[in-house]
Length: 268
Image 1 (spheres, helix red, strand yellow):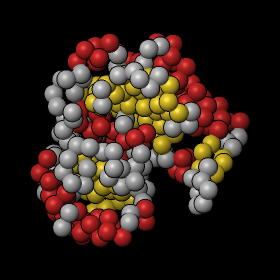
Image 2 (tube, helix red, strand yellow):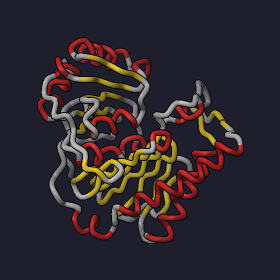
Image 3 (cartoon, helix red, strand yellow):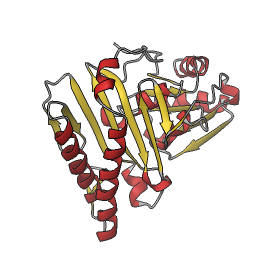
Image 4 (cartoon, rainbow, N blue to C red):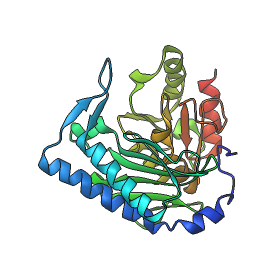
């Protein structure tokens, strides 16, 4: 069982078997696959029956590259990818892959898209990577520590909503009741920015943003984020103050007091 703040070193045995340098290898193969598609001419499809939910040849090429490398090094581990589904679902150790998080940003030429890789053991988020190729940044949460390009990162430790820098990707995605809760937080925060995708969570870890609130996320959207935020000293949980993220409602904060203040307004 996880807690919103993290639960110590419960995954030490697994962590010792997966070197953090392996995440850099995953970054490298995925970046090469995406760059090849961008160079050759990106093809985009709409996978939604209604509306617009884009997937590109870069998404699929990157996931194939990630899967191949994991299969080579950890053939007994499960793999759950956004584009190609679940392999070895009975394994207690699972890699969660979102080969391009923020596909809309990618096709619009914006730098906020990311390669997300999460490592999960028995339901615990034990390691993760937020790779930001357009910004030449790789954040890795591993062993209770988060690094960016090798340097240890810490959150801002901001504890007051009145001083907080708030972000969400798209406020129009909230339901009416969710929008009302978010608006209460937005009005209390110092400044709010939109459209950041996984970059917002990366900026929690680097101390540049203090709070991210979102809903409707799927496991591939958040599995990589948990270890990165917590490894930098942050808190990530749901809108009710618990650790379970399966409902897709996610709050990431630079500190426990800030998380608690935001959750209280969301639930008002």
